[in-house]
Image (cartoon, rainbow, N blue to C red; front, top):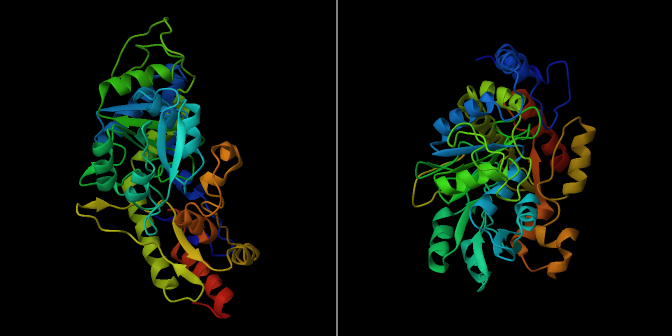
Length: 396
């Protein structure tokens, strides 16, 4: 496979945080063929291409059921509701994650309860989650962030002790596996996001729910289509005009499905490319003063598969570094600047600074560097040289 965007830096000194222009240039004939198939059939929502993508994703992940929806956030809401979340049920979530990890709980009718994270994985700390369990706890929802899974062994043991349902916020985790089981399928259900910058990205918002539980899948499929049971195309065929549940309009459209069908064919190659780029970053950034932490992949008691969605480091003088890199034409992102328990939308829960110190430290120091298959090794070198110049006055 050609990595045409290895020339992103040749004749062009900028390194965007994310680009997939070369990917789309290479895949465009396949994408057009898939889109033409949608146009030929003439059904653009809830059509055959969505069912085709659901089956392809089931084959890749090993999920018994896949329910394609219009975003990873909606997938979380549907997973919680389909798994039986009752109004007011508490859901234990990490204090460090994208806001949807907690806002989805509110949208589903539950109450988020925050717990601190592990410093190495940025995943929910099982011991901290145990301290958050109350008599009204019903669910625990770890988020798998950046390049590896949260401690599903410890979280699973916690869930069994307290009778909790595990829902995995595996939005970033396509390709990651726990003892051979794909992310999202260790708990009762999980989700994937296909936001454009994700490891498998669409041309807009899209997502999916994964599960082995037929009841969860059937309920989620109804909820995504206004609460109408029997309205999916693959696992539960048939169309019903009877609205049984109060659902939502969260169907994946067939154009996004067409893009994803085409891009899924190169997912494993993209994952390998990401690993190569991550290794190059490790080698070039090691030992630079001011770089406090490089990604640490934790090895568990069972085999796990890591996948680099983003390359997140911890740094000193983060704001100044971001400004310096921007001046050098290098894009970055901050994951995540405000811990969830201190977000204004959760102010009513009564949290205060200092409650979750590991999460709060991560919010102060983490910085994501460019990492995507279209990036060339010369681009990685330019980013590392700029970071080294900022801290030491000379290139890496």
